[in-house]
Length: 88
Image (cartoon, rainbow, N blue to C red; front, side, top):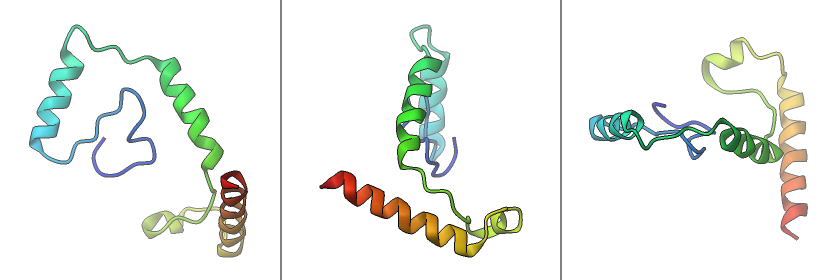
């Protein structure tokens, strides 16, 4: 992947910031020892999804989002409250 994404630390994901990262990712992926385990990826995403907060995204996504500003604010507040409860 290029840039920052919510799944950048998932097993089998490679963050590419520059040409060196690209070459390193390619070398790892094309090696005989590389295995991308879809079950591990799915487990990671499922665990991570416990912390998702659905809301209005910035930039061009705002034009296609079906969530309004008010719903997004409510979701963010509830998401933060749930997170803080878990931290107790």
